[in-house]
Length: 80
Image 1 (cartoon, rainbow, N blue to C red):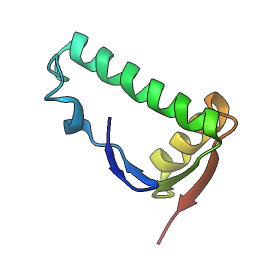
Image 2 (tube, one colour):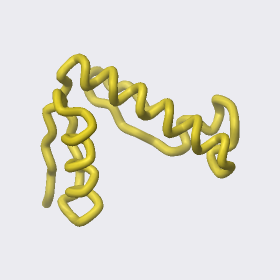
Image 3 (cartoon, one colour):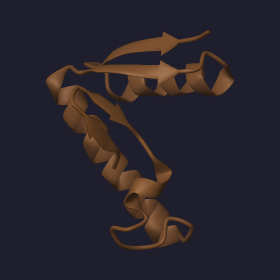
Image 4 (cartoon, rainbow, N blue to C red):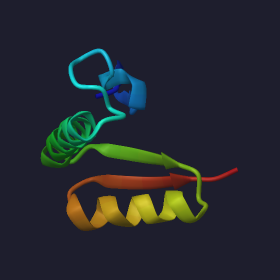
């Protein structure tokens, strides 16, 4: 559910397109969400550091959701 660049993970919507159901369909989107959740849960269990790029409404909301659902993640919000 992303690209491993050493310790840096990037989440890409197209990364799951080749692994099964089409992410534009309900089943494919559900599969993609479940894969992302499992990956974030694994990062949370390791106490990993996650950077959210962008401090606009969506970035701040995403960081808040990460903090709520994955409290062991270390989260940084990056803005220009």
